[in-house]
Length: 340
Image 1 (cartoon, rainbow, N blue to C red):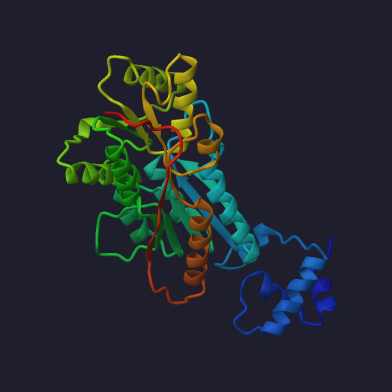
Image 2 (spheres, rainbow, N blue to C red):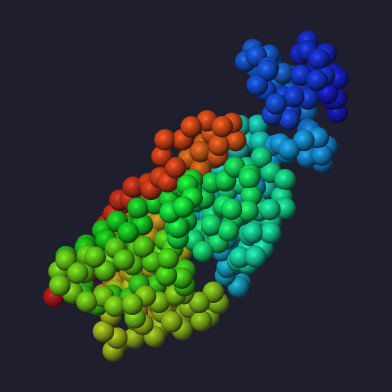
C-alpha cells in the first residue's frame, strides 16, 4: 500500500501538501496542485487511515446520515425503494466530493441528539427528523447540518432543508379522486405524528375536499402499523364489502403495492371493489397490477441537492434558498375507477 511520502514523491509535492489534501485543508493549495495530488491518490488507490484523519483535526472527511424512522418489525428501511434511491444518490455525491459516507437509522429522539453531538463529522444529514427535536439539534451542535423532508416548529433559526411540496401532492391526488366521484377516502400514513410530510399531504387532501364542500375529518387519517400482519388486518377491514370508503390513499407506494397484492389474494377486485393510490412513483407503483395512480417525486434529486447544500455549508459558501421544496406531479394509471 502506498504511503503519504510515496504519494508526495509521485506528485512532486511535499508530504504536508498531500496530508492537507487528504484532510480537506486546501485553501492554500492551488487548483493545479490539488488536481495533480488527487490524480496520484486515485492512481495509487490510496486508502487513508480514517482513525488517523479523525484524530488529526476537526475535519474527519466523514459525512454522517441519520435516518429517523421506526423500522417495520420484519423488514429493514433499505428495502423501501425510496430510501435506497435517496441514500444511493447521497453516497455517490459524497464520494465524488472526496468525502466518506456513514449511515445510522434510529427512531429514538434522544439518540439522534446524542449522536449529533458526539460524532466528529465534516457534515451531517438528518432525514425525516421530527420538528420538535430539530431545534434541539440546531442549538446543540456546530457541525454543518442539512435536513431532508423535515418540518420545523420555530422561526428563530435558519434551517437548511431539502423537502417536497407535500401538501400540493396531497391536493393533486385528492382533486383527481373527487373528479372521479370519490367522496369517502381513507388516508393511510406512514407517520403517526401531526406535523410531518404525511400530515402535510393529508392537509392537501382536505383542501381539495373543502373546495368541493366535502368533509374530510381527522378520523380519516390512519397511521400504519409496523407489523405486517396487523397491516393485513387493517387492509381487510377497510376494504370490507360493507365499507363506505371507495378509495385507500396511501402516503407511500410501498404500502399501496402491499395492500393491492394482499387484497387481490383475498379476492378483492382492485379497483372494481375499492380503488388505491400511492405516493412517490417508485418501481413498486409500476410493477404491481393494476399500475398505481400516484404522485411523482425524485428522491435521487433530493439526495443530490442535500449534499450540494451541505458542501456549501462546509466550505462557508452562501446559500440563497435554505429551505427548498421540490415540485410534484400526478401520475394517473389504472388503480382508480370512476364512481357515480
